[in-house]
Length: 429
Image (cartoon, rainbow, N blue to C red; front, side, top):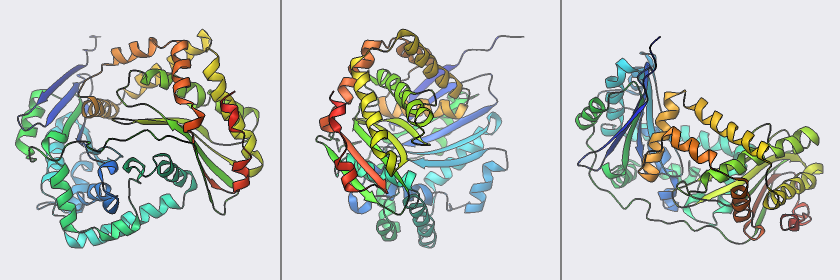
């Protein structure tokens, strides 16, 4: 059997400023392609919060030559898929197809991005869809708590705004405002076209030149710098549920911070899976919760490290005490080498298994390009994971777990007196 050929990365910056990056996987039969626009909910003024997400919806609602039905069927009829997402910092339109259908995928993506009609009639219809999406989140406590936490954590800064916006804002959107937002942000110097799979870089570059014609320059990318929040904050929102959903969060680090891999090790140790210490102690040993996990969100200039769990009122204090004690321990005691090595193996295994998917590879190179302008090979990423020491984990834990900058948000059956009785000094001990 012939050996597999190596994965190869290529990057090209066009005269317009648009960047094309590819990761060729010659033994794949598929191609994932994404059009990344460097605009998300953090780039919106309060009155237009949700507009990036709404535009994402609207671009699937018809072009000069394709109806919404034809857009939906264009790649599905070939066995492929077409979708999009909006985050706090980016909007991405992406497709997955067999390698022989790359040209069709580029054609459909360019059509919805360059030729969408954004008609008044379709805007009216889609408002109803997005409002129902907002209501679904608001009526799902495990989702709603993260919206409330983000708002509390970022203290009024735009990064804390909900990605989907508010019903009031969505009802106010019109064609003029949508078009103006696109002219301002959908510009070549803020766009990355990323593809992974059996893709030929030169061919994709020529297709992009032929099919896409974005304005060369828009507003300054990411002009609104975010400040890490300071000061202790605790907020409680009551509802009729028997459970209380809780997020505890601290200022984290940016996407490009060299300490990112140390923080990932900390995340996996504390709450990154069923073998993590919080899962084992809170769920398996004490049966205080069904769901408990940590999360590390990294952005272009800041980040947040947090813990989520849902528990009933009688376990509220014990569960949070357990979390605070584990925060305190990891600031003091070095992880044994055997445990550190196991966590590194878990991290590397998750990375390599994810990269069996061309879509995951496309997302990885697209995000790295738009966030840092650099390519990080899998080999380099593994080397950075291997380089993390037990002392590095203590260092990042001490940097992050500062009781003075803790934000606590709770939603559910707990009362304010329950919050007031919690012993936050456990984190300092």
